[in-house]
Amino acid sequence: MSANGTRGHKRERLRERAIEALLRCGSVREAAQEVGVAPSTLLRWLQDPTFREDFERARGRLLEAAVMRLQQAVGEAVDTLLRNMRCGNAATEVAAARAVLDAALKWAENVELRQRVEALENRF
Image (cartoon, rainbow, N blue to C red; front, top):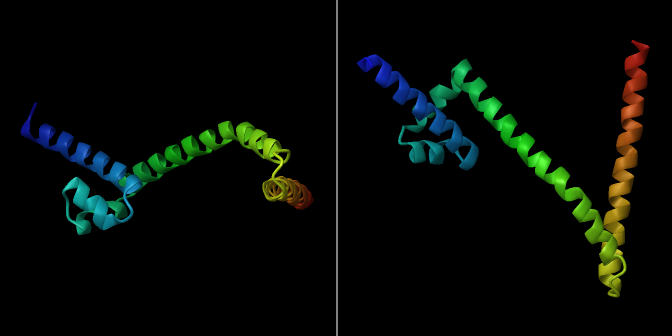
């Protein structure tokens, strides 16, 4: 492999590590330090459309994975709330009932909002 090919591969791997660090760290400075580049370099990379697109795609995958985990936990969360509504401790039962009612009301509001948006979209 040529020297340029090796350098290009190392640069790509460094940019991949930078994306991973940006997703994990609390700041650009912290991510840059973890990767071993200057914060100004990382900020410059974030201005590059290709790097930014790769970063946004990675962030989207991370968000999708988190949402899937939440969706998988919904049944267990509902079971927990329902169990705690009958646990014998009045304060816990009230808190669980409140959580169930809040979730139901938010869901109903969301359904109503979706219906209104669909009606508006159908008008145009």
